[in-house]
Amino acid sequence: MKSFSDKISIRKPDDMHVHLRQGEILKVCAPESAKWFERALVMPNTNPPINNRERLISYKKEIEEAISYHENKTFTPLMSFKLYPEMKEEDVIKLSEAGAIAGKLYPEGSTTNSEDGIKSWEQIKEALSAMSKLGIVLSIHGEKPDSFVLEREKDYLPELFKIIEHYPDLKIVLEHISSADGINAVITGPANLGATITVHHLLITLDDLIGQGIDPHNFCKPVVKTPKDREAIKNAVLSGNRKFFFGSDSAPHLESAKLKAGGSAGIFSVPAAIPLLVSFFEKNGSQELLENFISKYGAEFYKLPLNKSSITLERKENKIPGKFLDIIPFMAGFFI
Ligand code: DOR
Ligand code: ZN
Image (cartoon, rainbow, N blue to C red; front, side, top):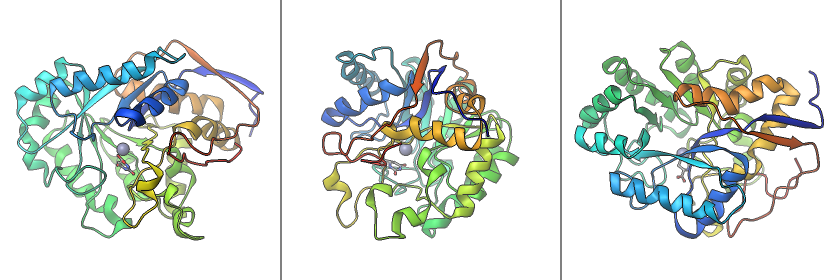
């Protein structure tokens, strides 16, 4: 594989799936996203959730405000809303007019703040058909919460295919894809089905979570899986298939929330993501594949213009900080 030069310039990347949180955590995490990304699709599982026009507008303002004191001010938050049972078409229309580009489906009990989630796609028929008409993307946390933890993604696929069957024009993203079964479903599924891939699902397995003592900082939902699953994810990324694009699923939690029994799922990966991806593609792929994956295919799927600005990445020893506030990032303290 050809090495990259010591200084590369690429189109500024997009993060098509991030959790920025609220309040003090947002003030730390939003500027970190702005440092690396031109745009990011912000997830709506806040408390209270982003599920109406007013909340979406005020959350967007809160994010913009958090960025405004920092040097990377060009960052644009792309907004999503959280689907809820019996959601009405008029609510989706209002959210669309307020700028939402995606609606997120959390199966009930699948992850952080999903107790108010969806039991069956039939509860959101009206919203799904409105989204399909308006061109709003359906973003899915694709896990069946009551299945065995390693099979939750696979077991969600029949539900996914029911949605596809009933809404053939709806654009769908299977988020943070984590299994060979999921990858296969996306490859063989229709053209309007895509998937985000995180840096942690691309690089680590269950061994990094529980193989040498528990490492709660590698715990997320869906959990990282087997070497075979990781291989399928790697092959999907390296195939250059435009259905697969980057979404960090960076999900910060305070250390105290992670280091306890029943600790929170989520990996704060933004500070390490781009350096890790550069080195992954240098080892296994090419600069063109890197740029397509982080700066092109996501925008194309969402029908957004490609970013015009660029980011310059220099080869130097890059140490991931040990902490941001009281949040431990992915690969904390490592040199990448
Ligand atoms: O690990 C996760 N954390 N997965 C998700 O889907 C949600 C996220 C969070 O919000 O903490
Ligand atoms: Zn997420």
